[in-house]
Amino acid sequence: MLKQVIAVVLCAALVTTGCASAGGPRVAQDPQNAPVDRAILADYIKQIPAGSRVRIERTAGGALRGTLLRSTPDSVTVQRNTRVPEPPVDVPLATITRLTLDTGGASVGKTVAIAVGAGVGATFAVLLLLAALLGD
Image (cartoon, rainbow, N blue to C red; front, side, top):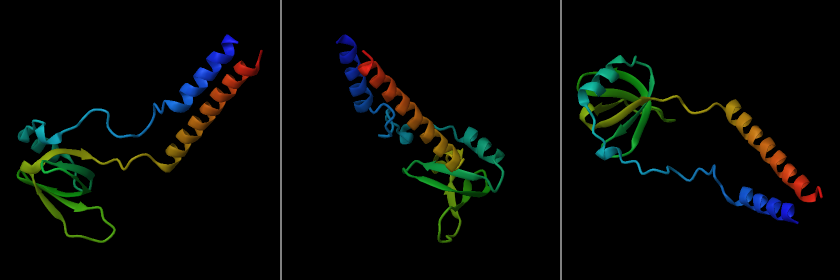
């Protein structure tokens, strides 16, 4: 009887926890208040080759994704990644809080492999709990 109660509790815990939910960031992030050393940022941007895909976070909020065309000591010129062509955007260095290389996210194959692995793992976990529940 105790094994059945434990198995039911574990099944309920697996179904209701949602521990891997994508509900957003768990820690509040405020890029406006983050201290930025402009000299270090300028040196970093200078080392990024033209043609790299970048993501720029600005002090006014929001992000800009595009291809780096040119960087000067005072500004960065980016061609935005849009379906409809737009003119290049010149972003002053004083308004940039963070500039990172944009990797483009995970590939479709990797995403499918992760989903299949999670499904197989969940299936085996449920079958194992059912075997423990009905094994007596």
